[in-house]
Length: 185
Image 1 (cartoon, rainbow, N blue to C red):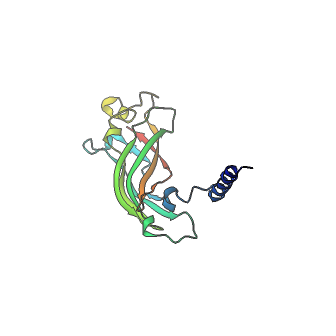
Image 2 (image 1 turned 45 degrees about the vertical axis):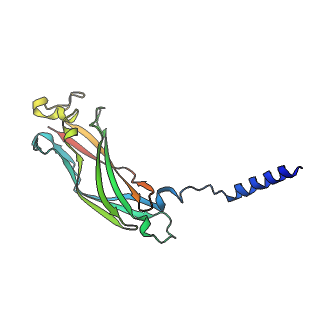
Image 3 (image 1 turned 120 degrees about the vertical axis):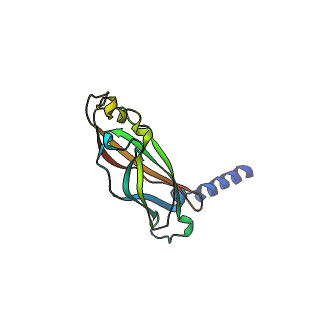
């Protein structure tokens, strides 16, 4: 065997031995972000009883927890997560298919490593969702019924998730947390 082939095979063996198949050591800065608790979840929304100049639907309180992925590691301040934004997407829980546009907002706060950050009065529906179908269909001035299904109520599933970065710069996000609201005229 030629010396160059021998060297190339040796380098290949060393590089393969030095690789580790796991990637979770670098994903998310070693932490998991979780929506750990809800309080004051809306379950019913009567759209015509909401002040037209302030059309928002809010969750009373949401808690976000920052958990170290590896329980054998002591967390560091670099694992704190700065929340940057959150997103609410919608699906239908009835026979309809039309949903409000995605709701995205910036949000500031820090979830300490192995700690909790609490957000109070978090908007999950705003004028841009109230003013378009299917929710706008339920306003009395628009007929008071869902034009797609003919129903006087809409069952809307909300899917909420938060986005942030560890202080060391790694992107992290929660898994979606879901709840359902029945929307009526």
